[in-house]
Amino acid sequence: MAVGPETWNEWKENLLSELYSKVMEELSGTRTIYSTDELLAKIKKDISEKLCLIYPPAWLDEQLQYMETRYLLITPPEKIMNHLHMINRLNMDTEEKVLVDVILDKGMAEFTVYTYDNITPGLFSKIAGVLAAAGYNILDVQIYTTTKGIVVDTFHAQDPYPEGVSSQLRQATVRKHICEVLTGTTTVESLFGKYANKLPKRKTITFAAQTQVEIDNESSDDFTIIDVFAADKQGLLYIITKTIFELGLAVYSSKIATHVEQIVDVFYVKDLNGNKITEHDRVTNIKQRLLEAIEEYWKL
Image 1 (cartoon, rainbow, N blue to C red):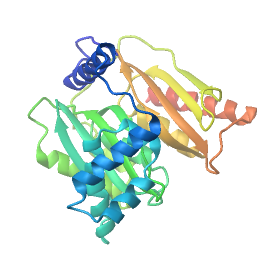
Image 2: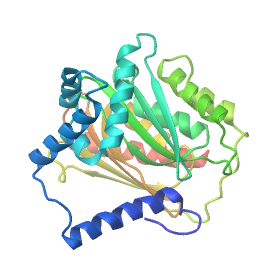
Image 3: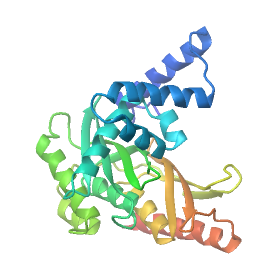
Image 4: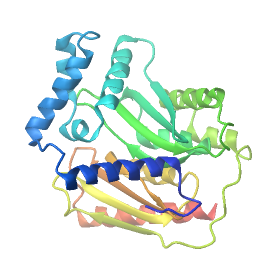
């Protein structure tokens, strides 16, 4: 994790603090060790007990069954409960097909998008595109879809405006644009035009990081892993994810990081039939298309 003055922020400070606390628990022996099954049962029981006065137990049990093991293990219970509140609201509202929750915390904006996985092709790419068009620097993404097809995608992003300038009106506008793009009433491209020349200028990069794309079929039994290394540029995540979508791939998980103006993005993907991409020619084509897309974007 980069810690230079241009890359350090309160969000990264919070991540390091959490890591320190967990390491100290482990080293001191105060952390209780559970098996995976025991931990899952405990998480579900704790959440059900806290929400049983709000929702019917049968509904809670059903929703928790729809949630994948990895999501339940890595997501804080408070977040899971908030997600359940929003999922219930999405299920109850027959008019709204997209809900966007915005939380400002430690100098960062957290956008969580709740919708259905069949609402539009290229869902992840389009959300990233809206945030990029509005000038947000995306630092971290958690992508999650329940087995019933409800999407819960969370983007942690840094606002380009100085502290205090990011008003409720600005957040409401971005929320509105996400809903409009996902429901097809506007496009990401039109938003880039709308925001052009209205955002603060980002610092010009003074070095050229070598662009690399690596495709890994060995580290995961279920997914093909795409690693992208490139010099950072506003909107680059949108270009990468848009290209991945155009290649006929679905992103199931992603890890986004920026190290001193260089991105290190990791995408866990499958083809549209739910399979890994193992054919040599297709792997080569994916790598070449991504390299070309990144290089072309840098020429703009």
